[in-house]
Length: 116
Image 1 (cartoon, rainbow, N blue to C red):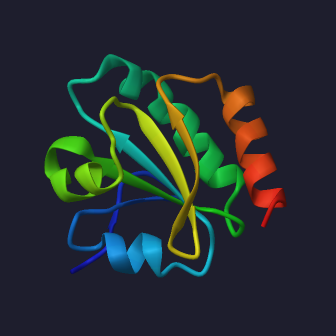
Image 2 (cartoon, rainbow, N blue to C red):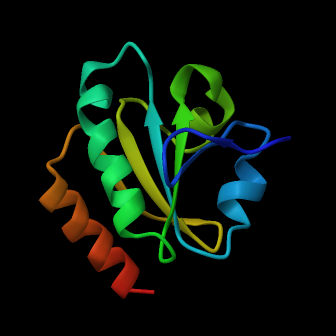
């Protein structure tokens, strides 16, 4: 399956590509579960895109359309969106549910990346 770049620094993932792009990634991976019909998802999207550029080389940033990824959403208990999850070595190491300001997300990511 061909990789699809959503915006600069972000990659779309699907149920089919999740194993390869997220669980087997060399870097920690942020997965943004979102949907086009979700207003808070639209509010956080530019923040996620900015963080993708800022953390380039230290964090892989992906976006998973909630409606197109029911397998992943079910497996990881995503019940509300936006949900941002961070994976390292195939394991979930962090989760943020709902809109968060950029400073709060940056703080959480810094803590998660420093821990590993």
